[in-house]
Image 1 (spheres, helix red, strand yellow):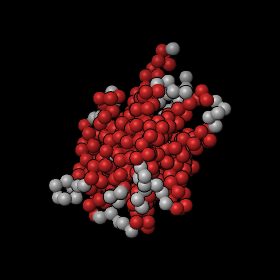
Image 2 (tube, rainbow, N blue to C red):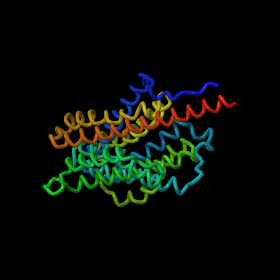
Image 3 (cartoon, rainbow, N blue to C red):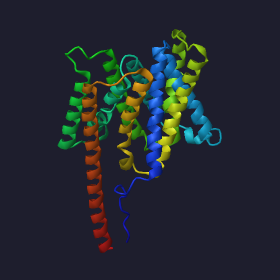
Image 4 (cartoon, rainbow, N blue to C red):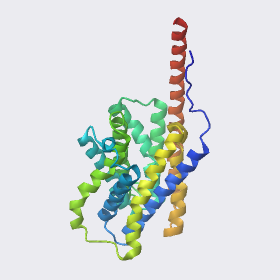
Length: 313
């Protein structure tokens, strides 16, 4: 009896690596464009709505939803709407944070999200973390404190928005993990953008700060292209490699954010931001490593039990 082995230890396919790097270049362009627009005076609501609406149109176009609409049918519509609201909250708070913070600052705080997800997975999903991962979570929180430095006049409304964005995204990810067992991937992709675009539409009347000129309108349209393109490439990458193999690549976005902030906005993070970001990234990578070790150990245990059962049969 042949027992399939876990292939998490195999080398990551180069194509998947290239796709993941392109994913976070797209997401960097998305944040850079959002920051440019809000600094130019465009309403954050307009920026968020355009990002989701163009995303919906592109998803329908590329996935050809008119051919097999059953793929997009939701089993739990209220859950899809709530999940979409979580993504909207994450996007909206992030846009508001970008108005006052550097790109690298918002990204550093955003990287604390995997640690929050690990902490919340216990009470919400029954996936409890051990003491080593809790120590990594606390270490990552120290990194957040170094970046925000509350009590020394550094912590501002932008940091609060960035923290709210990270928390909203954490709940969005947890809901995605819970719903992935009963919902199609097409419905998860579509409704995550459709729900906020529909809910935001009535609010546009209260957002008179529209883009000015053709270039700003072009940037607004590109928001959806960068967002949908990044998610599409992400799906392609996960078809070529495992979650464990691709887990470290999101941290590559820090490099792109620093470069973009320096080139476009002439901003370079100070030493405290870089130190805090390094601590958060190190803590996140340790959690990834620890979860991989536990997954391999559990897989080995299952293999041993299967081999014993095969001998009895």
